Image 1 (cartoon, rainbow, N blue to C red):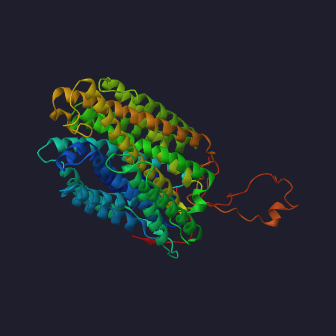
Image 2 (image 1 turned 60 degrees about the vertical axis):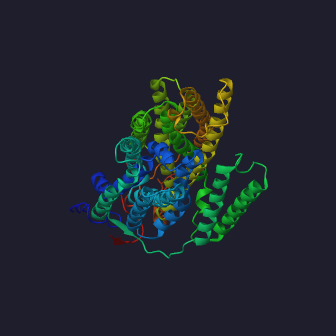
Length: 568
């Protein structure tokens, strides 16, 4: 009997057909290119923000919301994208996400006011939610959990590479005659290339399902989370309202009411946007809790790192991009190396625990920096927490995907990404407020100690101390550095919650098939008296799965599941 040839990388695999590593990578080329483009455009803004805010006459609050707007839009739409990925053609959804992303980039690039810029960033965030959720769902639908560690590592490597290239490229563009607007325009040709690669390389199968979109749940989720994050961004400031005020009561109470209604609706919806039966499972619940803390560390700390280098240390945007490379290198090494080792040995919890420990340690050390700290020390600190982030991000998703059926992999993956992004959005907003208030207070204290006036200069929110008198500029730089260290310390405390969460996650063996295999019915002749040597205590779950390789537990890369029809 001859072995049938492996399917061509340009054709979708038939049910049960194995795909080689090369074929999977070829199929994912366009997907990785699209994700690289989107993340590049997000991170490219980091070192351009001081110039953007100065040019558009923005404040420290605006600085935070340029990041928060994209994160919030991505967070509240990620579960919806994940549900759409379970119901519709994933390839089409990825392509749609890229088109939406280009539209948001162009709008942001032409922005002449902060509100227009925020609108463009929100559109970018919606597209990022789609790219993140659908990308993870595509990998989950093509590759078994045992092999998925490798490809999750590759995905993490793409994210790390884009994260590394973004700030550096953004700094170069800002410092060049092109100006900050080209940090948004530069992704347009890259997006076109990604769309072409997606069309040529990605081939998937789809299974017909009854479509039911939970629009009520989506609206309640968006309204509840948005209200809470807006409150976090503005509470406690002299120009807005206090922690104990009617505005706070109205916004917090309204958010709690909306989210309570969301839980009620999701418990009754046919296709809930956030499936309660999945997120309440022990592994998923703990991974979600850890992802909240990881989101704060990933987005909040890195957002203000570039500002530390430019404002507190006086470096150019290009230099700031170069100085963030140790963090990116750590992220890349942690993601790729842990993914390869998980695929090789099949153990994943140790990498989550190790990553959480490194994250806490790196952030705590970064909490000791000031405006005079050696750059070698700063680079070492951020390398450590970058390494921890790389070991945590994709592997938390992997742990969750291992517990669900392939038909729910989009929703499960999106749920983890949703809470991670929510953590990031809340962290950027809340810690941005802490940074602004701390900087203003420390600056005023420093000016008073130096016998200088505090009433004629907007010292508390100035992002350009070089344009102020030397004595005032030095005080502001010191204030920003000390306030940034405070941000890292707070984030380190939050990261402890991630460590506690992963410690309590129960490690289960990574299955070797794409979908969960039902236990086979045992014929009476095999289990009855005629089989005296049978061991009644031996588990037989999944033993009849045709695509499971029980010799080493790895199995094969399959597209097993219900009979499907090719799409795309």
